[in-house]
Image (cartoon, rainbow, N blue to C red; front, side):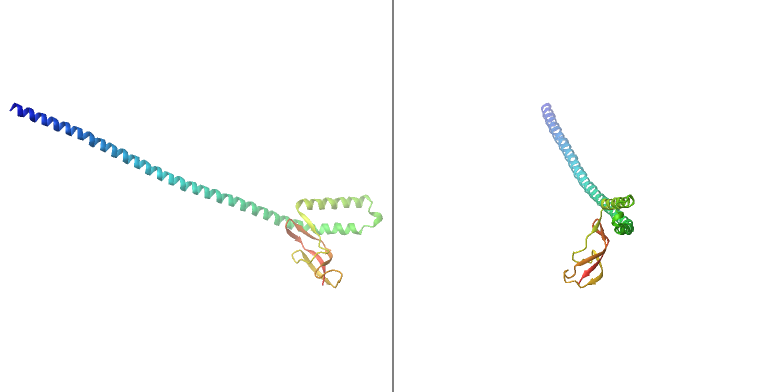
Length: 191
């Protein structure tokens, strides 16, 4: 029996060794599974974060584009309001310009060299220079084809020398402010 016990003890030792060898394999497999699941979780988290970053970047870019559009629109509206206000003021100055021109035309030839008339001419030139700097330009209508967008026909005349629908005389100067008509030219048109 002694030998049988020894054989049994040896078999038990072998079984223990096999079990001990199998247990680390199970532990290693569990560790590997744990590592794999952690790795997968980290990858999933990275994908989720990348998606969030993409969404936030897109949202940021859209907001910046919208902000830029609002800024441009506001600047454009400011310029339009400024121009509308300027046109109102400039329209009120045009009769003053007309009166300067009428006054200077009425001066007799022998009085044109007087200091008073020269002073008035200087003021007129300064006023016209300032208007020019602001973007106000006189329109030259005489001899050009009538354009209802620029001219206001107050008279029609028969004139065979001038072509049909041609401005033969400018009765009151018209003015442009930048690209807009400030005042239409009052004209006499040939039929």
